[in-house]
Length: 338
View 1: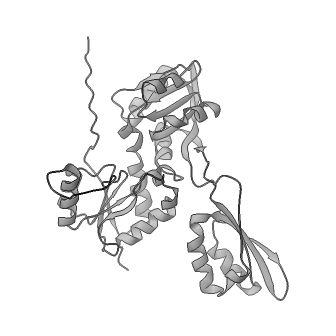
View 2: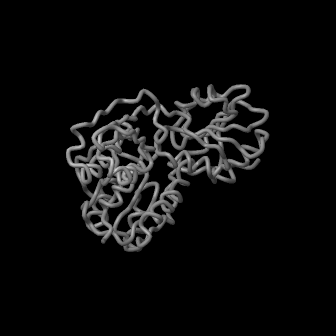
């Protein structure tokens, strides 16, 4: 079976569901035909002129980007405008574009987890798991279908309860965005199962979506040693920071602009919070015993590209998946040695 752009979209729907994106965002398949066959794809952080040329040169059928190339409404698509020029050349060369942005920020194993792994944090978990998307489902089915139903509900820890008339009650809990796919699979084996189905919202956070990550270093580090670690591991040319922490062991991170989570980071008991795009007044969140560090937007997010490539290669072993060689970081630093 040929891999299409839709198959790649479905892959991200399972890993980073569209329903977990923030309201302002624009994600999913942004350019191209859903049923377009894909033999080679290119993974990048930003879709720039250089990345488009790279896609053309490598014969890539699809670009998978973290940042959406179409973010604000386009009134025109002309080569006089930066975004219009990129869109024009993508369409002209029949290159599709898929974006996984804030939905990938919120995903288990997503942007912040990749950042935490690069730093070397262990025992990682979500910093802010405020998504309440869990639903508890109960339905009746013939006892003879128990093993098949359990197989279909893999990952939901289904509970099977003996009932009457050769039937059993099946109960499971899953995120709401997974239910349509699960229900479609169940309906193929139990026509009319919805007649006995009850769905109840669960008032507790989901464990598969959230923002930011907390974790721990193998060994405590001094502040200077920790800042040096960030430079070496994340590739930052410089780090802006405030506050001070004598010894750093527990660390909170959030890829991209995550300073809004600074209070949660401190409340979690973290000695340091590492993020990007921190504004002047936000730096006052750093204080004695708590380090706030800005490592740069690109540097905090680019490491998820390796994760994306690895995960897609496991799912699509016959697909050629390339990671961009173009550094799309628009920020340059000038350092004067006096």
